Length: 137
Image (cartoon, rainbow, N blue to C red; front, side, top):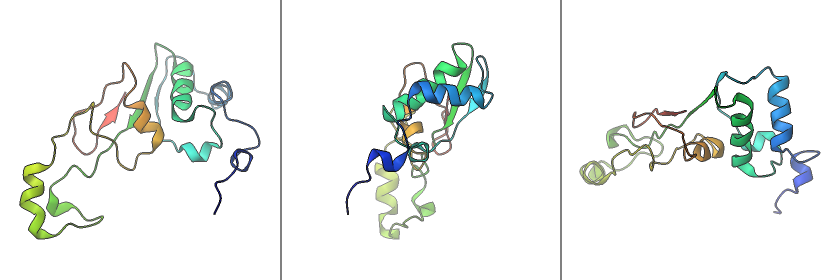
């Protein structure tokens, strides 16, 4: 099976400039706080991938606005609660002992998508301390 061509994703490249225009058309303005949970693939072929989306969001809300995204890491939990997939009961003690602690700057997001994973590492972005249901702003 071959990889889809860029023109299969969208009729033209999605750029920081086009996303900025689209966000303005949706009513997003400088100084606003926006909660974003986005899908990179749903946008089409994005020139610059996730960083371009984050750049467009930051450009639109400006220095006086705030972008917020969920940066959940649900795998960071008690092994008895792991269900997708469940782990063997015989592993519980070892997982409890060896699971790295949640570290906002290091622990990756899970199931939040490429945009949120990219956003959490941007300079000036702070991530909350909840080990499973964090947000970054």
